[in-house]
Image 1 (cartoon, rainbow, N blue to C red):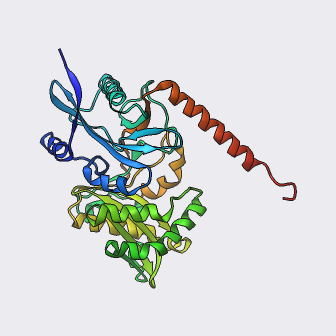
Image 2 (cartoon, rainbow, N blue to C red):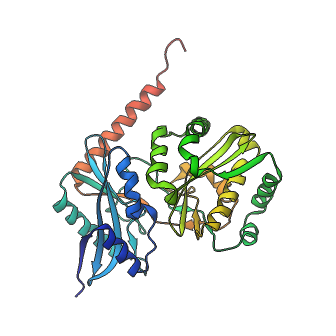
Image 3 (cartoon, rainbow, N blue to C red):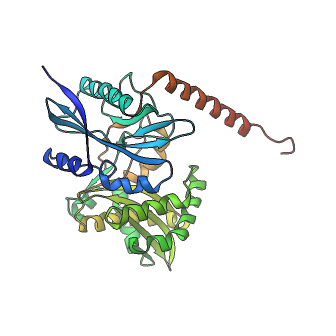
Length: 346
């Protein structure tokens, strides 16, 4: 008869158990991410959990406690991380059921847990807030530069080569002076948000990320012309993985293909650091049509699209969670009504 249970581990034991199981944890599932959670408002590292099946590690899950308005939830970003083989639908449901029991005993203030799932299931809900993705572009940095160029779309190779010929543009790793230059770079993010109609966080959020994670786990890259920033990117890293977290560009930079130069330069610099994969962090799918605008740019760099587990909400207290959905829907309807009401003089 199969037995299973969750065990809580300290940071050192959690990392050691993952290594013993040949698991390459994403940054958000490591203790290194905790420094950012501690620095950010409304976040607290909650627990490092391992799901044991017949006393052998089957899944690893680091959880952060997040405070919303009138509720708290847990966020296991890019988790759980499973050992081989890929979990079945039945395994994922069993794991979540045991997780609910564990959480209820440990902390009765938690309304739901947000985590990733390979399989869709009727015990999961679409995210209360935020956008997830379940398709992405991952560049294989174990390949040399010639191979990476060869695997680009024709248009991608053309644009990268054209950008490389523009000697007025200089790509650089500015991690060493990230906090000094970021106030200037943030203006590009404001421009990008207004242009592409998406919300941005306060400047302090990005600065906290850079300072809390430090140069070992968070890099800042730029492309400048005559000292002026044309675009920039924040990339998180482990020893083997990199993720393109945030980016911004000016209209001048887009016209000059500065973002193409940036991605290619980051790819080369990350390879030199020994990183093996570079995740460009999401393109559109049925669940994430909002990301359709980035597909054309990101797929320049490879024609291979990777399916990944998307994030879902898993209610711990179902009735309370349904109430949150109703309240949020009412709030959104009210906001939409106000935005749709024009002043008579307009």
